[in-house]
Figure 1 (tube, rainbow, N blue to C red):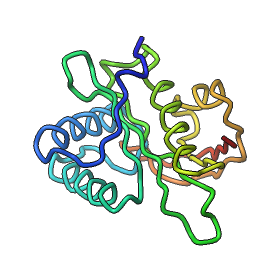
Figure 2 (figure 1 turned 60 degrees about the vertical axis):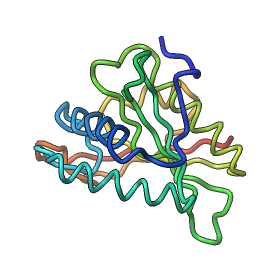
Figure 3 (figure 1 turned 90 degrees about the vertical axis):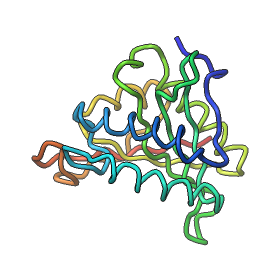
Length: 175
């Protein structure tokens, strides 16, 4: 079981160690079939470009980036709270890219990351959170257990990383 002590907010990314570890987590999740915006095979160059864009967004304070570390210090999970929203939605944040390396799953890490993201969003003045997840991708029971309310499903929303259409389920939570 992971504790909230293993969750850390990154205000800047170490160009080598942090980005390399985050790339490993992202590539592992995509290889494992997670529909998280990328197709298989996900190249290291594409993963690095993604995390460099996220690092720039973090520096602009548009999002909160949380990571979970093993006892050795290696990043094995991550989630983001996207704070930058349209001007008529200053009270809302999107939860994005909950990723847990397959070797670190089934120990409560996803739940710990989600609870930390909620706490960080609340501290940033947000009161409504929204997320979407691949329908049938495995994360829905976690979100529902944590009190998220299913708002609906959109058929044929995206592609699975190996190909083929998948629906998405939209969730919201007041915090």
